[in-house]
Amino acid sequence: MWVGAAFLSALLLGFYDVAKKRSLADNAVIPVLLLNTLFATLLFSPIILDAELSLGWFDGTPFESSRGTLGDHVLVATKAAITLSSWLCGYYAIKSLPLTIVGPVNATRPVVVLLGALLLFGERLNAWQWSGVLLTIVSLYLLSVAGSRESINFRHNRHIWALFAAMLLGAVSGLWDKYIISSHSLDPLFVQSWFGVYQLAMMSLIAAVMWLPKRHIEKFRWVWTIPFISLFVSAADFFYYHALDAEGSMVAVVSMIRRSSVIVTFICGALLFGERNLRAKAVDMLLILVGMTLLAIGSR
Image (cartoon, rainbow, N blue to C red; front, top):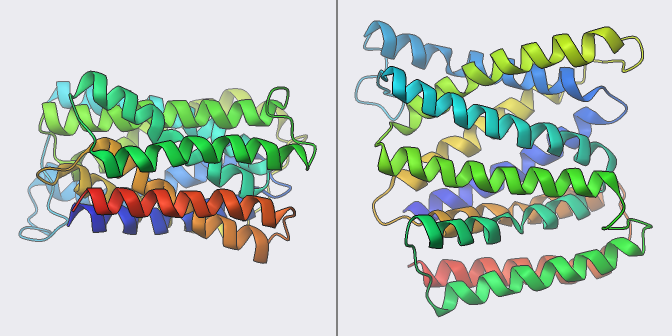
């Protein structure tokens, strides 16, 4: 069951990346991210009110949440800071790089999660799962070769570095999720709903300091896809947290499966954004697909 939830989360993550790419075209990054955090917070505000005021609106439903202690809120606020740092780097990267580059690089995030899971949680992978990991590593090398044909130098391009920073911070966030949900038994819905509140507060401060003084230079325009960023990432995270909370779930495998979102970003990059060099990148995507299949087989 948790494997299916992870794959559904991956599908939604792919649409999330597409909505980001469309929204950020010729647009200021910080206000787009600010609106994303605002809409996500509004989306979960009824859940917070229900839990905090004991209204009973969602009792007995998948949206029933709980109240947390001060310590719980500190853990969630820490997660919000880590994830927001990852999103800032990722938004700047996805604005300037092809989706057919961004998706596969993001697909390498589980390798970092794997190392952390092995060291921190004692998780062990079987032969099927290790094969999926190794294929992902090979795909990163092939992607760097494909990128060089589009004059994207993986060593010297600052947007590539931002993308890798987003990937590493996202991996740390994934490990933190496993830690606070498994070790501290936090309610996944409590984490997801309050995480948005703390992100909105942090992002409002960042916008006031970094964007408002330069708003006449870094201009913002409304795009209809902006609300869909929040919708897709909230739905993706909902299934992600439930996968992590399931008995027997492995954070390394859940994180790896979520990276199959590369399929959606690859197809949309080709059809919607007219990106180039697709044949070489298709080989990389094929390896990702095979890797996800091996992981699914090894997780049954």
